[in-house]
Length: 110
Length: 237
Image (cartoon, rainbow over all chains, first blue to last red; front, side, top):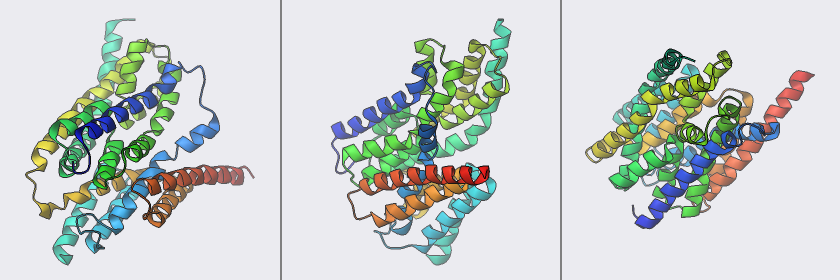
């Protein structure tokens, strides 16, 4: 990968692997003797919806493939993916809907 | 306890895990493609899927690496995506906490979203199950899911290079994230958190890659928690 040495890439992979393992092991390891306080659970509940939208938003508005130029087909695909996901509550249906919208959009708009 | 009980628990888990193949295989293929597109070699792509085995955080890391984010920010942000797993761990602890350290390590390694969701539902439905039955069920759920994550990643990484640019695969990862997001927008608090995350991330896009996202995620978590408290107080009135 451009910009990273193999050592840096493997550092990322291994540290992520170890860190993720310990997050998963954390409370199991304590054998459930100390349950998480309610306030901590309340924050943790929102981590996926806190991280994923912020990660994707710039990619939708300034796509990498167009060199950052706004692309209506990609915006439409993003909106359709969210809409199908909210309505169907089904991740796979949302992926398929989003890809269909993307290809239709790229074909119609160019 | 008879071995037939254990076998029944294992196969019940296996049946419950089977439908997730439909999600895991395309998702794994997309990760293999995204990793290869970003310039990772086969060993590195497989290293992610085998050592980390957490799709959303793997996509996050690869995306940030494509943006040339500093290593520390790649790590902080992609591990933040996995914070929810500490919550899974806390919620499984009353059921599996008494297992041996070796068994708990295996449970932890394979603790993907689908395995957790199926296991906690089964344990709460039938809490009187023995520890061994609960572990057998967990192993059953993981069998159709986890090995297929490695295999489909490999398929994506090998095929990825052969897929032409017209397929706009740069957008495969964003679509996968958004597809996971839709079903997660369960309440006003979740929607508010997502909205703050988008707003702050776009406003701070001028910061070094990854830093704006980290701030946006923290702001969004606080927003979600506060909106939830506010809704509880309103409902209590």
